[in-house]
Length: 173
Image (tube, rainbow, N blue to C red):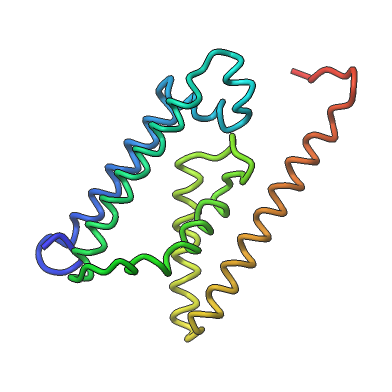
């Protein structure tokens, strides 16, 4: 039993911690991670600079698919049932965790640590709303509003940082 009951209840936590550590190492300590951020900021400039943009994106998709498969195995073991619609209601929560964690929707900014903080915040919010007896649809509306607020704030902060740069000016370093 791999799920949340029985004597192996800690196995999903260990797997999640291992995946988080691997992701942090991959993005923060390797050349591949630097390429990922560069491609996220500007894929055309990365291609012109000689980075393997297509290969990096395909490798990211392979990693994402493998981790999604691992997550589905854990969710199936935890629920003790295999259904194709098992994770349908987790999509908005996942997106909210990443966006609230500070990852820009336009790419290039974010990180594994920020995403972890977003996951912890959204989990705390979901649990608090659940304990208050808030309905599922209302919880989804709150999450959608939070995503919208985070995306607008991110856009405004990114724009405000861009307002300092005028034609002919240089950065103060």
